[in-house]
Length: 624
Ligand code: PRX
Picture (cartoon, protein in one colour):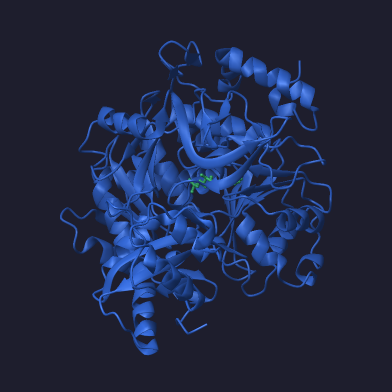
């Protein structure tokens, strides 16, 4: 029988056979893959269908699997190759060296009183130390809480305090796109007003510490991390992932979908601040002892060939990136690609948002040279790992994420939402809203998760999808009030919270509109307290809006359009009618829409006019 990870280039028939079996006999399927984990105590079964438990009785450690076992066998093999802001800036960290870095950080954490189950904040650029710090937490059974270093001090403070982080690991500064970013300053600004501020640990200046290389052997019920993501509410939520079931799912999806071989060089352009940077940078490639390339610069600085240059220098064979990056690089002259030899590439990946046909074709033809299948991987922070991916064939369907991974049973509900009816090991365990991780029992957070995410036993993804006769699934985008800006998930309510804090603003509503590079961007409707505003006053408020979103969320959250309107369309009960706002912002006429529920329909012509005159805010909020 074919092993699933040898499924390269198989036809659909074999795929469906193995797939059906994985649903019928999930335990058998996962028993085979759980052997990839080095166990302290092996579980007797992989999945107990009656209790829904994964890996019951198993004892192991994620860091041991990602680092120690390779440091023993292949100590000199590069684990991480890092590229900095300038092309010549390169560091190579072997597995043995990475192990030393990890032990040093975990020793410092222990010395500062961090224990198993504690939350450790992490606010760092994309450097090897960030991965070492995550692995250090995994080693001692503490939960890391990574906050993307592009988030503001305020956003960082919220996440740290809700999770009751005990310490925060950071560095002094970072260079990106030729600019120096004072990372530590942001951390200091974040903790200054916190009631119980976490202790700041600067990884640049760890000093001498007595090394303590103990490993915390974890059971199936222990957790690995908490990571915040956006939903429909004004506040982001913390998603908690297990340690052992999570690593089983992440490792297996990585192995099968990217068809990995021991000598592969893998380059993923995500940041550790997102789930992709967790599952498929900090964990899966190291788990298999592969060499991982990471990059902390900007893809267009000093020139628009940084990715292609790195692929050539390192002989990268698997390249995993995002549609927004591909679209932005597609705009540059082809000479940036053509001056590099990309023949080492074997497999390409895409994640974060639907990939449009033109970007797909360019990726396939120009980057992959027509040789490399594109793994359009659909998944979410909550799902832990990849849930949908196409087969590795050169006859792929552009823009179609494709088939469910083994053990995943997708079902499109009557309202077009993608739901998942089977159980899989990567699914998050619990969700934290405004309550602490440490202060609340896991049970409490687990219940909240079940209440918010399931209907009739099916997991709700919040994404719209269609399925064709071959069973291939195409994702259309979010159905809820979440905007996907350059693959970053942000709640419209988070924008509104920031905007409504401005003195001159009475209320606001933010909707998504398409954007050529970012995929989507934020369009803000703003009702000011003063009715008649001069163009200068509007430009002034617009500047404050950009500053407020930057301050509350981060620079990635800037609305690109602002329309000043006299009022927002509302229902009798005062609820904003968002679908009308969305339609008008997208250039449609309200006249073709169902406006029966809008009690103040006289504002509709004004809205349409305001959208025509909306302020476009590239940087300085100049008039369009
Ligand atoms: O809307 C889907 C979109 O990104 C959302 C999940 O965002 P996040 O939790 O930040 O995780 C992103 C990285 C896994 C999904 O609900 N999305 C992600 N991948 C795809 C996608 N939409 C279409 N095609 C994809 N391949």
